[in-house]
Length: 141
Image 1 (cartoon, rainbow, N blue to C red):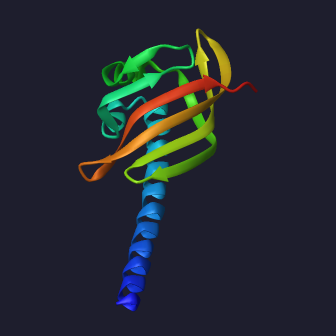
Image 2: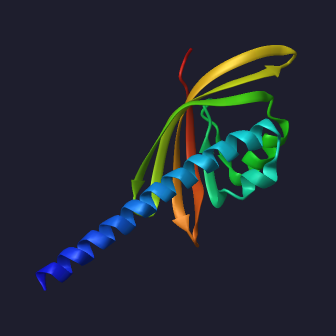
């Protein structure tokens, strides 16, 4: 009986560890899809990874719905978005991603570079990871 419990605990531990590693890599890949969708102005790609109830708090303090974010992606001025760092913290069917990204673009004819921090919340829903909220703040240079 004890060896059966030890075996069950070990296999469950391996299954969970495998799920965690797989989930982390999928979430990191979707974070990159997010950045690429903004760079190439692709709301369809972004829509696929955002939950219908998605909420974004921008670095200016605005609160945007999924529909507003998808409209914003069409007019975004970034030419390049580079992730400097990203950490994924898994908590069951929820993942919190924190990181820093640098955006380069042209706005009103003038080039800009911004460095921002983000915190994204993802949930595992209906067999896939979807982003339910993001918060962005200026990180300085």
